[in-house]
Image (cartoon, rainbow, N blue to C red):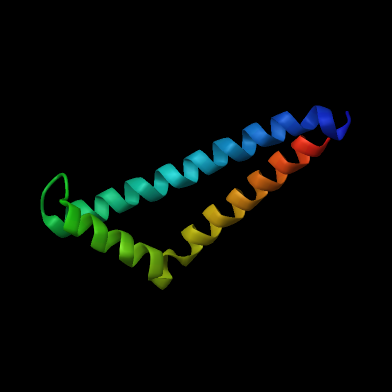
Length: 84
């Protein structure tokens, strides 16, 4: 099989992985914001503070790095598909 034939499958796999990682990150964010506010659905202030923490805190570095790497891989695959 040639690369142009495999490229759509690789794009679908990368996109599925990206969706999973972002969904997991958003659900973790919602869980932390709800815990912080003490209610099932956090308000805007608690949500913003949790996002701010998640974007800067070292304990979320791995999750941020995984999302960034999969995003870059997906963009590279899409660019490759555009030029082949």
